[in-house]
Amino acid sequence: MERKCYAKINLTLDSLKKREDGYHEIDSIMTRINLFDELIIKRNNENKFNYIASKDDICDIKDNLIYKVWDILKDRVESFGVDVKLIKNIPVAAGLAGGSTDAAEMIKALNELWDLNMTRDEMMDIGKRLGADIPFFFLESNARARGIGEKLTSFSNKLKMKILLINDGTAISSAFVYKRLKDYGTIDTERIIKGLEEGKTEVIKDFRNVMEDVIYENFTHLLEIRNRLLDLGAENALVSGSGASIFAVFLEDKALEKAYHTLKYDYQRVLKVGLVDD
Image 1 (cartoon, rainbow, N blue to C red):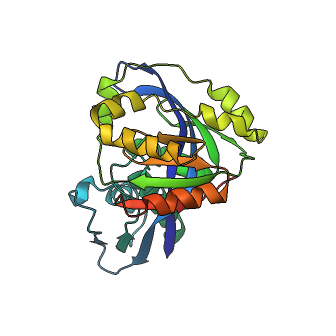
Image 2 (image 1 turned 90 degrees about the vertical axis):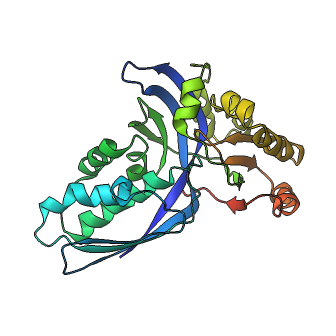
């Protein structure tokens, strides 16, 4: 069984407040892009979890979200051995939810492989136990995410946006950014969603991530990337999640191609990507 694990970007990301448990209440617009990891799963007769790690997958196996999914679900079946291979294409610690999307697809895959007959809501509940971003990937649509990311509302995006994604290899810890965050509740998410639903291009200028002040202050080279993208004709350019990937939004192929060919040899990853959901 093979599954595509699509990355996400945050068209907006607002932090509303810090909770007593240390988590931050957010309000964000999330959408999937066609950059994906490849998850390959098959049964084995050993009742073991055999994992072929990607070169980018350096964590202890028991900290791996794919393993954690298997560990949670294995007691539901008698024969629970699986061989898992992950081909990692999404950069790690990059604000693209690579680990979260892998976990979501692992839940879907085991639900099918083991005939668990879980509903979408049941799968989302399992995902929520492992990470706030994971439930989003069960919607398979654009969504507004609230709470700590688990309260989701789907919507339709009518804008045909073209995306250039840049990742220069910088890895940023979410905890590093959230600890220094000072900007709260400044984005009119409702109005931006309405604009996307109506196909109004002017709302692109309002895409914003409140994490950026912290990120650009501490990683000034990322601000330089953003400014280069704007100088090359992007309608907007911003950090996804807590970084460190930067994506630029274009409306015209000509401007996108110019930016791509200007920058493609300057950074580790420069990718033209499309939106998966409309």
